[in-house]
Length: 225
Image (tube, rainbow, N blue to C red; front, side):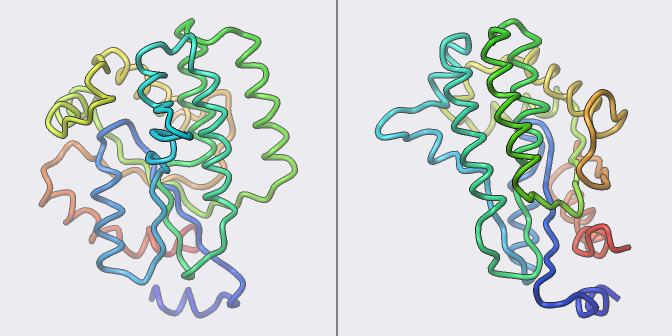
């Protein structure tokens, strides 16, 4: 069934899919599973770039002092995510870890609401985002939301032990979770760029792999269901 749907598209038509969710919700596991079992292109968040901007670790700086470095990091995140969205395709199906949309609607919004980003910085990022999304084609066929409780994310975060993430409290994950729920479940305030497929992701690895397989056709067919 999936093969027939893909064959119905011309060679110039692609299926861009964004994998969204909180920190440590299982995005890497999802991307790795489909990369190993399907003929698709996987683009992960360019964290290595955020960690080394001509020798500067912007990600660490932002977590240590968000009031000072929030605008700097998020400006660079917006640029690097745009680069992912607009890069040349190497397969008919592309999976991207998060998106330029969640960078703005979740992480920039959280900095502003928490009082860690001045209104003028938020206004500048918003102006840039509005210009980009108005003037640049950023197609998304489907958003896969790995819906995970903040407590589960916090435990996974501690287990994987990334240096920059050691300072992330549970409260931060709760704020990110609520913004994701407002955007992808309740559709509050901001528009959805594509249909949303919700996959509960509090489970262990084997259960999650089983769920990915169960949803394979829905995911790889994008919005063409």
